[in-house]
Length: 488
Image 1 (cartoon, rainbow, N blue to C red):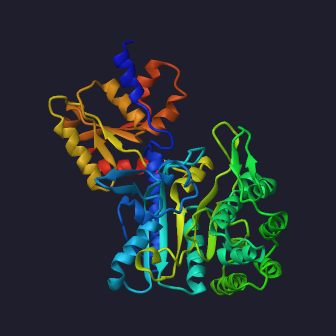
Image 2 (spheres, rainbow, N blue to C red):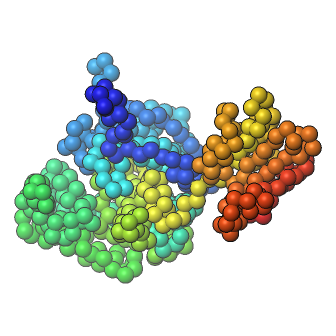
Image 3 (cartoon, rainbow, N blue to C red):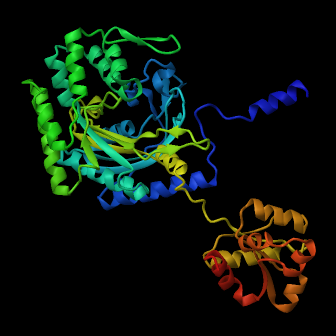
């Protein structure tokens, strides 16, 4: 093989962290988006699409992987200005709200969906491009807005197809954590950010790994060393005591956290937020298995200012080789009262929830819950010099609300049937000279034919029985096809 041919072949591969979505996966994602946005609409949210690119300065520097090239985003320089692909749907909303604040209703309730891009290290179920479906309320400062967002999140995940018990939303508050940090004498913003990122890795590294990151640092299996926050022993103990406070019910957790909140203003404010959420959940009839208070919920993005929440998929899953798979987070959000102030100079209260569509659909695929979209009925081109007959029949089938296509090309019967098989067509329709003369059509039920053909031993038997094949009057075409699609 020549060097030129090899070079062209090497081009036929996708970059790491990106997916090629075939029909079943593509359809599943679109179905999830449709179901979730319907819930958002029912709760009074309006749609908004802000586009893929923003000025890099507008997006801000909030990503947890800010030490990576391009600071976690994919960007390029346009003249003397840097543009970047959005890394979430919230930062563009903040820019839009600031730009149009005088004309927007207050509070402003919007939903959005679409791809986002992050220049992060890809891994199993972790992509550099993925779909999100968000809802946000801008301009509402009460804890009731956060509670509403959480209640809607439960309804949205269930509407998407997750059963009760398959997932759980954990809730924490940055203000309570801020109070704990203040009580431990941790005031420097840089140290706090390092602490937040360390806590956010609890599920990955465990208590000992987080404690190391709060101290001098941690060395991983490859020998790479991550510098820690440099806290003193007493400070590490205070943070870990908060992090590992968990009890059976939301009320019991609040009681335990009250003993750790201390007398700082932030700590007391955070405790009041959890107490307010508990009252709202009671009013909204949100059960303790759907939403729990969990100090492990930190959220890596640095723009959160109050309650933070994360939806985790709990159902045990296995990959194609039978190995256990941990999906983890399928969505999250929280309160971000300072984000719009970056543009306006004035604090604007805001809260939101983002559903990770790609991650949730991965969970559905591994659980076997995905169903492929109905394949089209294929109308074979039996009269090669007049393909318009097949095209007209396919149009008639589509007009009746069924999915259909006419075979494009002049291949023989064997090749056309092979095409229909690869398309997983439920049936094929044939209109040759004989059928046209008699005013009939030949329909082959491919699923039934495959089932019956398993009991046929010779080619002669197959030709005589023509399994799954029938000739019907022209005006019975649609009725017969609908019966086949119903399994008849």
